[in-house]
Length: 368
Ligand code: OSB
Ligand code: MG
Image (cartoon, rainbow, N blue to C red; front, side, top):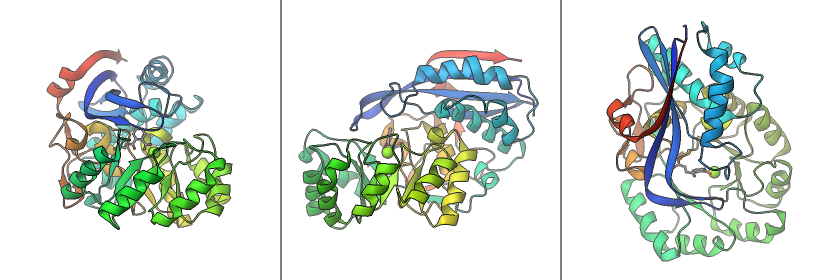
């Protein structure tokens, strides 16, 4: 398929509620939508990169820069024969996985539309619905957090993930266990701790958490292996895993027992599937993380989550958790704690151009 045209749309959406982690506080997002045109079809992708470099080094603006100045010139006007062929054309660009992922996912959507197949089938997915969890930000007080947990449990979410940071950890977990008993519960530290905090992690072992996500540095896999040897709670890596090679090393070292796969963080669905396949062979369960993706990015995440080793509820939640108005139709909804996969060509959920236009703050068009 020849890439005839690529559009980049800088789209700004306001979150329903501000979201705080140990590394940032957000009330709106700036994601770059990527549209690839070929033979009368359009494929949609999304760079779900944070605006500021507090989760990873990339930003909305570096995504635009890398796409405009390095990735697009290598693929525009080219006849691309496979996803490997696409990736090979920009393989020399180091890192910048979020930038790459927007284009790569648009390519997958285009390919699936071209073959008139749902994307999940093209990827080898086996599920018609995926189990959904919810990720909750750090609140001012425990009293602010508890009603939110209650609300999402009532909505049917299959597990609760709580963000923690030093000073807002143990007491929060204690209160949540006290109020809600044995609910499926996990924590995400977004790399806020060090090995010096071992006594805290040993204390957390008493609360039977499903896992603790990225407790130590964003670029570490070695100290995580030391920590995992000392605690019972499974460690799940997020920030540290950028590729199947990273995953192999982390598994060999014993740095984690679970991996959170985000297509954006690993450069797209091809690498995400590779990590999935490796973990499957090694007996490491995976789940799909999120970056507060808009409906387009979440539709890709849903397709990925249908692969067989996505055996834990992910961070792909309903549109109503994030936004007053999403940019796809139908909006992504929860049905008995699960999200349906739509049996239509491509990502299934349809992008609504009118909505996209309403929230677009800048757009760039590249023609062959
Ligand atoms: O660490 O998983 C994370 C959101 C932005 C950046 C990092 C993370 C998150 C989330 C939210 O936890 C997941 C979601 O609901 O999309
Ligand atoms: Mg995380």
